[in-house]
Length: 262
Image (cartoon, rainbow, N blue to C red; front, side, top):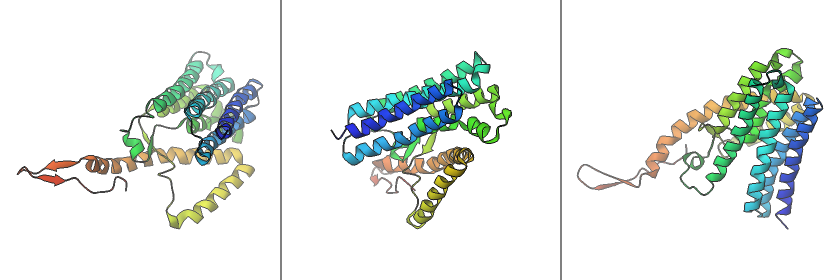
């Protein structure tokens, strides 16, 4: 029975993503985006609920992946297509398809590596590529700007198609991105982070779209930070993974005892 709670949260996230498509069909793009964001919030809760209740199951993992494929792959692709990409019947649809397919491929890659221990990015506390929920949020960046400003320039289908395609590539790329493990603040900064989180929630309630723009831009800025951080960590990991090395006289020297993380 403990597995019912996290699986119910996953099902709620799936329903929220599908409801976003329904809102987009009716032309209510504000609520369509909000529905997908709610799906992202629920997606963040189901795994934590499963760990808290010690109710992690293979069924739950598969259900979560299938729900993510729809909520963060199919739903955003259709919402953006119904919003502006439909003005480019062929190119717009290809961009939407690329986003949905890349999201599914990313999730399939993740599932296929569950039992693989040799994952350098994961061992160093990084993710491989942009996660599906964050990819959906990034794909909506032109919509955030359009809703916040009302300017038609942000709904130009060619620009939006190029942006959606770029986000799709980032999802299936091998770019190391920062995980929550890497974003943990030092003890001396925790109070400031708590205050910042409260301010972000307040900003979401008062100026939701501009706040979403800011949050998305901050995450985009963190992508090169993740690349630079991983470039520093990678040599240390290689040194720590080497069990032993021989000196010129045939003696065995101990492997480096440097930590695998900075």
